Length: 545
Image (tube, helix red, strand yellow):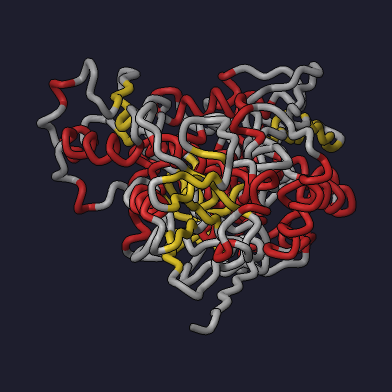
């Protein structure tokens, strides 16, 4: 029978269709075939390939074979050393004695029967070891250095093996793997780490050349009325993805007074001392307890209040953009900010700014049903609802079982609103109807994005772009830094005061400091834009090594 060579040259992101390595064994190798059955039936399901007589393993696949060959009743040892009960994984030590059909790949694993221990566990650990190495997540030169925790001492064998690896997967991918570093444990729950470790590689956008399938837009939002740093990040991410931007705010969350106290007041202190009373003309105190959606912004009163607060440069514009509720008025500020930014960076971008609302079909959904959906998708408890008296309802309903039979419509009519986990769940679930790219911020609470996994596989077309941690904070007149997002109306006032030349310089510096998409080695990096009367300063805190 003629020998058939099935050479597969693997390139970056293509070592399998699922971002997982492919394992192969010969059809006549009983133990090897048993290993394939285990690997393809686990979660994740690893791709496997059966090699027939006369065929050879595709280059770059991982060949599994029985390490003890039998001749009648006698055992012919192909491998005489077994550092573990079931497997020998140091391919640079054994690839010269591998079976003939496996001579076309440098990745080989010898296996043997052993009544002690668990073969399935050993195989899964080995498979994860190779997966993390191929993805550049292991932070070691050789895949099996994570197996025993020790670097290899056989340098001559290692260098010869690396030459073989380079021929199989290409120099570029090997260089990327060898230059990678392990994500520090302290960053494992950040948004960037979740994307790089748990999302299918083919669904993660890390450069402009990658396809986003049938995605119609890039999407992100904020639970506050307006968050300039989230908005600018989303703008840059959408431009990098070459897609329109859909950005939403959530006026149901919190009341008007909370935004005025926590966002507008600290920003006003850029210009000098300020008290809450200075904002009473903008929104009367008896309206502060209402949701932003229920607070009407009177154009005349807005302009007059801005003049009294010292925001004279933007007072007329702020008034002309009023005549709507408070949430929409703040989205109008973001739209003006977007126009200024796009003029400076010389880019075009179609932007849709809208209010996040509870879809009508969920008004009759019971709290227990929402809790079950979120809890299953997330894999642990998360906040599904917030109440008017400070309630935070977890998806396991601990302490809130009395709410299980109530509908979301009932609660919303009494001042409740969606919690963060519910917002993310309903956001990702939209990909069942419209394919889109989600922006994933490298924030501390990144594990909430784990619920996206259901829609990151066929038949859905959800994609993700990780972006760096980025904040725009006001530097108070006293010199103190306020760790609250700058108010967009105050930001626009400052730009008018600075003039076009300084404003253009500020915008360029802010734009250049945005990392979209986020590179893996910058997970944990923090960028702070500190805004003062005379301009900005950029402070970067590098990630821990």
